[in-house]
Length: 509
Image (cartoon, rainbow, N blue to C red):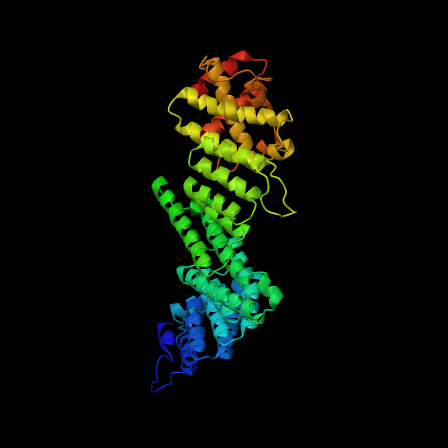
């Protein structure tokens, strides 16, 4: 494989600098003479040689050879029984161990994605962009090979060179859906290309011509550059979120300080994209600002978040549901429920300052309820006194009672389907009930007057269908699970005081 990768880098006795034929000769030798099984890295080296020589046709030939090898090995594996019985005979006839090993390898190839990537890169550099797009499609749909960051980077680079903005955005959206984070090279390339687009768009608008990458005036008005900038920011955020929400066995273990450092680094990268966009003369839209808010929210940076909200209004835009929810979530991550409450109130009282006839006043939903409840819960976890903790729990329960009583616009059915929100209400209700049993309330500070007891609320919540399903490990921590278990005991033993009393004591411990 290493020998193949050196072919055609300079002229030699067995081939010229632009002649990939020696690479095919070496592949044939390793496979037929030395019985060494080529893997994905081998074919990647072969196809890369063809690409360097500008021979996309031979690059595709190399890819077909790899697929043919896979097909043959798959057929051989299906006939594995007869081949296995013949193994002893082969060795008795003098075949070496590595020859048998070659014939009985599974049909999966190591680093197969590298070969597909090299083929796409060769086609892109040769101007065969449609072929590269077709390879990107069939590798997933027909052959089950998952593109990686390098694959997507090679394709977007070719698409941007060809002025194919729409397809570039499709690749970025695919990366966002799959949680593939742009590499540093791709990140820089996309920003450079978007800046070049912005420059061309400004020039074409000044001269009243549509000529960038085959786009007409209508395409330019749509703002190709800002779409690339916005999708790049969105891809960075979604890749980070996918990593955060990955299963525990796939997560890398990081300390709280490292997690915050990662969030701050993400915020910096997103803001760099934003600043590059402004420097290129591109006017950000609401989707772009919402990406900034999401990055601020992830880092819990309430100062930058407030600055972004001011910029939104200053640019004549109106915050939407995503904008308000991200500000509430950002305040929650900062442990500032007072700021979260302020944003909630601002959202309810906001009046459009633009002339957008399609503006719809903000209406709180289950996700907004979850964000504000999370703000109270996070601050409660850091509260210096038990009394302050109970005050925050009481606010969560009071919010829920407002929804039950029709005093809030949050849809009760939607809220009951939100597992995380209902677990927070349940935990708050159980904690308040236990504090009441221990006479832990300071009546001067915590309002305990309500239409129903917190115990009744907890027993009703625990019977919700959403809580009968498997709980997400992301938010089902030990204390929440204890509250859930105790509420189930209350629901089962309403007539039996002794088991209930013993369970209460266990929970308090």
